[in-house]
Amino acid sequence: MSDITALIDSVRTKQPLVHNITNQVVINFTANGLYALGAAPVMANAVEEAKEMAQNADALLLNIGTLTTAQVEAMVLAGKSANEKGIPVVLDPVGVGATSFRTEAAKKILENVKISVVRGNAGEISSLAGLESNMKGVDGTSDEDFKEIALAAVKQLQVPVIVTGKQDVITDGNQMFVLDNGHPLLTKVTGTGCLLSSVIAAFLSTSDSIVKAAAGAVSFYNIAAEIAAEHTSAPGSFQVAFLDALYQLKSNVVSETAKIEHLDITKKEE
Ligand SMILES: Nc1ncnc2c1ncn2[C@@H]1O[C@H](COP(=O)(O)OP(=O)(O)O)[C@@H](O)[C@H]1O
Ligand SMILES: Cc1ncsc1CCOP(=O)(O)O
Ligand SMILES: [Mg+2]
Image (cartoon, rainbow, N blue to C red):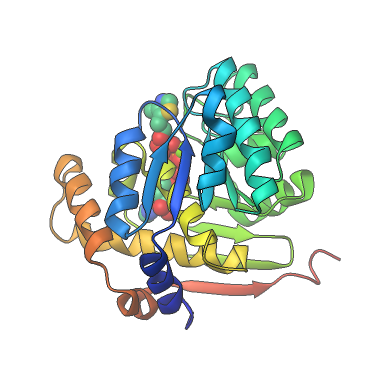
């Protein structure tokens, strides 16, 4: 996609502030990943400041990975505040379907906040779409067709959806992008899905097209992983090499390397 270069350059120029209400596992990795690519992070969970912090931000990330009742309340407050300001809100429904608490929380957030895009693995998105899914902890085990899962979720939620995995599918029900970059080592480092959701939030803040910005973000991210994997084959050093690659990756290299298939699915949606 020719406009990926401009998209990445504009993120790095604007350095968008992403307000993250995220899980305890990935806080540090998320903050460092956002800095590395050229955005800025702030983590603010408290009910008392959620609304105000969202007003300071350029994008909001809601991640239900280590949820508490108070955090759900903070997410709804921050989400409504972000909607008032008109900044993008990304939902990462970590482990939804694994417990009823997570499922109810995701439902509450989706009912109360206008979400720009939901990003999850196939198991999570299947669960949100009401399809059969087999969530064990935070890792999905679905082998189904990602395109069908994504379309079912868009229909069910009326929100654009990103299903990630070996391939990534991005759709708003009208357009669909199927992406084919990435590296299996991403699945051996915790938080790579969570950081990706924050990176998508940063990219959304500089673009009017949710699906194009998401395609640019996921391509950028997964090409950084491919470059990191050229330097190492083990997870610990891969995590470090990956942060370095997010920092060093040139926008034109992403345009040249991105494997993106663009499908007009308007007719398929009848
Ligand atoms: N088998 C794979 N090969 C290449 N890239 C992958 C593979 N599985 C996941 N990814 C990439 O890893 C990142 C995290 O995706 P995923 O594992 O689906 O999320 P989560 O960590 O939330 O389960 C995404 O950038 C995705 O494209
Ligand atoms: C292991 C774990 N447990 C609760 S949240 C979390 C992190 C999940 O990160 P990701 O979905 O990016 O793999
Ligand atoms: Mg995840």
